[in-house]
Length: 134
Image (cartoon, rainbow, N blue to C red; front, side, top):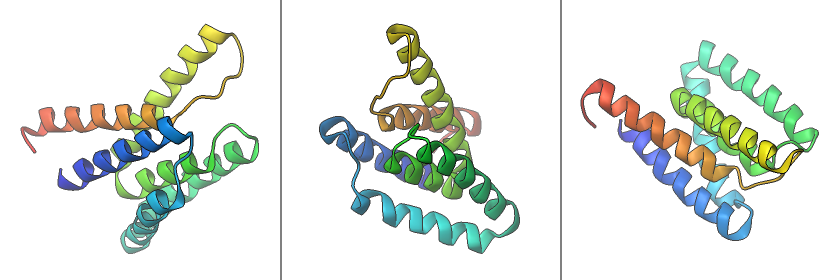
């Protein structure tokens, strides 16, 4: 549980940057993405496939303007380091996006990283409850 806890702390820092400046800089995202790529290569097989598929989908979304570059790097890092956190982040993004669309009736732009951080924090909380401690 230490790695997921560290990842959540990293996400909180990224979320803070996203809220304050509406961007998350490369110094925050690239080192963790690099660690995720190394972890996927070391694990091989399923980890590489997961990272490749997530990268493909996110790359298309980024290319179409549906997602920012930092969002893609953060989600790829989650895919490589903590897949459960990725699922929590994606669920939170989906809920936040739907709420924003319903409130504004159309396509909206918003700081997505805070939603990712909340989703991952909820995932960590559930994992701690299920597994009985940190």
